[in-house]
Length: 581
Image 1 (cartoon, rainbow, N blue to C red):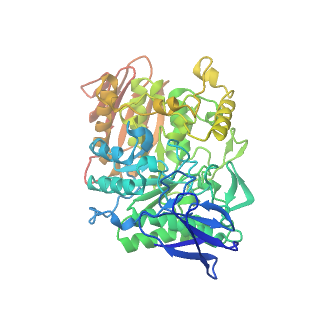
Image 2: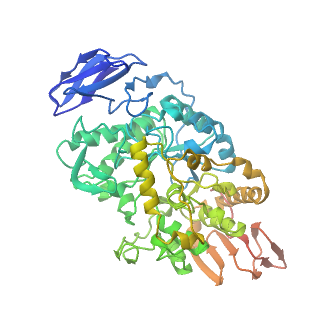
Image 3: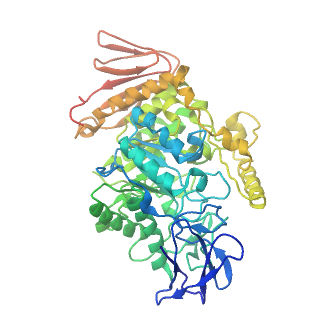
């Protein structure tokens, strides 16, 4: 490849060849567009850039950082992988049962290759799309990935870019799509060397992580190109099927054409060229369907968006928690509204935010455009102890939770291990250098020193130290649980729910059997739809009339058209023949 880099304000740029101090440097030539061109680099060459005498800095578009975020880049020949998915036409994110996983904690080895070896289990469960938490290089060996840098590279401890190609290829051989979680709203504080090259950031807006990415000020044309080229590269060169865009509400852009709309249109054009489905899924807390409206209608054009309100309504109802952002949730009325209207806060007052929030979802919007879950990395990992719902919910409540997600009109997502009731926590962990690491530890302890966590957990708690490797090790899932006791029963229940899902996918099924949530008695909750879910979370049996009973969990008996659902038990009633889903 020819060494090149955008550095519009630099007076001189050189390319350093090699990783050792004193390696030779080759002066680069400036073009009229602020791009500098240098020597031709062979595959496997280590290189970095010196900008006006400062550096050397890794290539902003470099594909590998073999020595970590502070080392040089290494040339990676993207064409060396022999793909086996030539007939692959993609998996549409809409309606696909998605499985979010963190590569480092999904297996004991914590690599993309070991994760690929575990994919047959997910395919056998009925998963259709695997969503990888961010893979960008991060400081040290471990982390969640949301403080990554060098967004064109893949974290080396995971196996680097070649391992990602192997993972995607393996997934496609099993019929699984792959979603990659990307972070375009900020870079981490350690190893972020974009500043010396150009105006990648602006102080015109503030984000929770500092300055915003420059999407609408001087130099933003190239910054937007930097991000969009990155997105298209994952689709084109790594055969990824979808991108999950982190916290898009922090992508501040007041230009005539929003960054997300531009990304959407260019993704659609690439999908047409490649002849396969490509999807964009946005994480947004704006509660506004403009995110998924077509760009031709002034929308952002996203395929789908995460819907936290469904999570909050379901979690608060099942657990009884009312702290923080759960303060407006927990009632069956809130749960019903979330399922019928998508957003609980759809222009109404949010106690947590102290103001009106959101907007109604227009009639006729496909509910599959909203991704829902009962657990994900944020909702679990951002708890003081990183405890999963399965650590406190009864088996029947877990079964109800799984049914309410998998048999909903939305696009369902499971968090790794949820399919068998994993009880190990998913905690916040980092591997920063000592000084920054100490600040992260202190900040975490301070953040969770109050907020009613002791009341929630029933006594004093010890917040895990993110820098302690033991925190990371506690978060590695144990799939051996899946064959033991109640975990085996939950795993079987998920298989039965997957078997019932086709009834929810029959065209027109949700028109014939509208969604709704109700309580027949305290803690006896029913989700209506093409498949009705009746969950008895009370202490006494309940009876109702029904003939076409499907799968059951717990103590459920039938006879003479009467179904008896015992305490902590769930029954499915099939209202819609499976037909041709």
